[in-house]
Image (cartoon, rainbow, N blue to C red; front, side, top):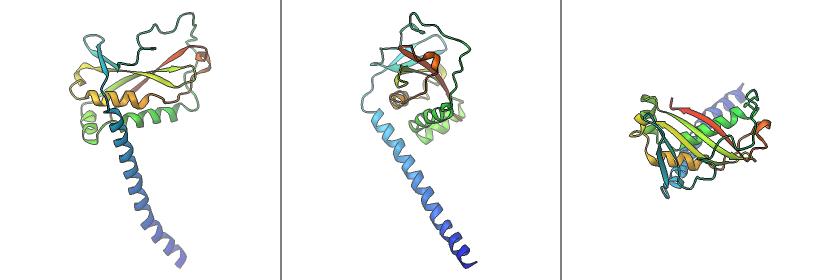
Length: 181
């Protein structure tokens, strides 16, 4: 009985310490993403139509703007795009996006129902090489260029699982929608 009481007291002491350490580590990760992304701004804003803007990095021209699907490729529309790793990969993508946004602005984005459509262009190995973000024009004043650039830079290099039907393509375009909530 005495051992159980001692163990429960230790858990009550250790648990808050662990939680505060995790919170500090997550905040430091957010800051490192932001400082990496703010080094140089080379963002291109291309007006897509009267409702949306498309954003991508100036250096991203290998796949962006090219015809998709690539020439001489066949796509099976019934091929499942899901994989066993899809949920983990989506969570990882969402965490990178969240890490780029300051907590104060995040709340503002939630209040304004901001949403982003992100196109990730991957090579045949599944590594994200280029990122394009489609955003409604009404959010352009809320979401700053530094956030867009941070998201683009943060997602580059991410590994994704490519469905078997698309393995032979020179590149693969994957869409990811993100709503602040």
